[in-house]
Image (tube, rainbow, N blue to C red):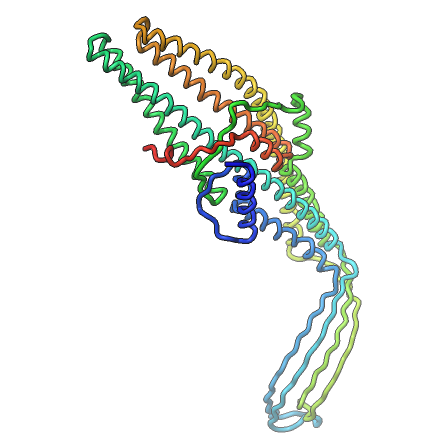
Length: 461
């Protein structure tokens, strides 16, 4: 497929995602399409977005107590009374019934309440933590999209290699059978070839199952079935980390990892919660202004009234005792603060371990790729030599089978090492909190332009 049609196809898919246009449930795509689809359709990431939006409401909710609180109420009462006796001559006598209508408009304004300030500090920390958590979820989504794409690609490449091995072993098995019938070869050679063929066939079934599982995992995060994949090019550019000093990577991880940042802010929010609960003992000052009107068409005194009142009050509230509730909440807040502190420490240690493991994985994978490339070249020449010797009758079929097995084993190991290098590079970026779409695009350009249709390989049973 040429570059221009592919670019138009990608733009159409992005436009369809944005506009909600119907799309085919299956497509052929590369890593770029995988992470873009995941960004738009991964339920885990979309849930994190909504969770962050909900958490961001903590800030306006914390500001609300600082603003005027206005309320209105109205009532209508119908009274029936029967004065049986009274020593007060002013009271009406006998039966009467009358309605009463009233309404009130009240404005309350907090003047000083330290609890509100502590709540605001807590809300700010919570919102900042939610933003860091969302960034962590975004980087998790990018890493999962890359992992599932390359797992599927690796399974496909492995299956292609196994089927090549299967064809080679089948040809050797057929030759061994023919020689056995002619009496020029021993029965053991034909049996060895048959056994090796069945072993390869068993590995083929396992590889096909791995491919189906990988494609389902890719569909789980993208919401699409990929009909074709693009494997890594034979020549993989290995840039390596900009520095191999472990301390520098650990320092970057502890400073920039968004999950560590979120937990640090969670500790700040828990600290503010302790302060907020302690401030419940402090006095509070507030102002109340009310306008009230009450209209009675009757009363105990026999006549109606229409009264309008306005009043203002400066109110001081000093909490004294509430059954030990505040003390209990302070203890609870302190325990939650200790929990958050330990969670932060645990995540920092985990990030340190992940960053070092990824750094070691990158450097090890680079060395393995170089060594396995040389091994594959050597095994290829060795197998060709054994094949020549076998055709001339100077070598048994078992030697050729062993040479082919070693060659395809090293090829499979090379595939794993190349994909391990890619994923450990992305995991290292993820550990230090620097994984971006540009990092995925960097490896996307290293994919082969030729797509491999997965249907014939998925159909292997």
